Image (cartoon, rainbow, N blue to C red; front, top):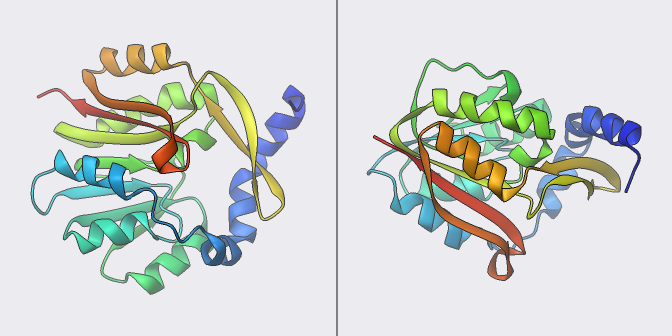
Length: 207
């Protein structure tokens, strides 16, 4: 594992990596739609024509695209301007917001929030703080779905040959934080073999 200093640098530069490689990342993203089964679970908790905030939406495919096809109102938020340019051109009917999730303050509450392969780019301390931000943007009975790590720690991934930062809290800590905010974990699966070994957490806010 990289040194703490190196991990700090990688964390700081992760948004820039996606900015530099937006087109290539979008073109070569896996074409197999392995996320569909989890998106269907997410959708099953939402009312018809629900409002959804896609945090770390990237270029909008396949997550936002699938939600739009199911007639939901999708707002995408991402810290990469280059990614959002692709999303806006591809799906002009939706609202695409250039912002860092750590500082988002939207004047709207949503029926659902999803951060697929986005939330885990935050540091552990940033993740702890982010849950209150998610809570502030969710309606009562709102649903939150995240991809997380299968255990606490910091690691790196690769985007077009450059390292990007990933971290996770322990499952126990995720449970504690969500419980303290009034969420109940409805689904949790670590390293799901039917979803390219993603670890997925879905929680619902109590009414």
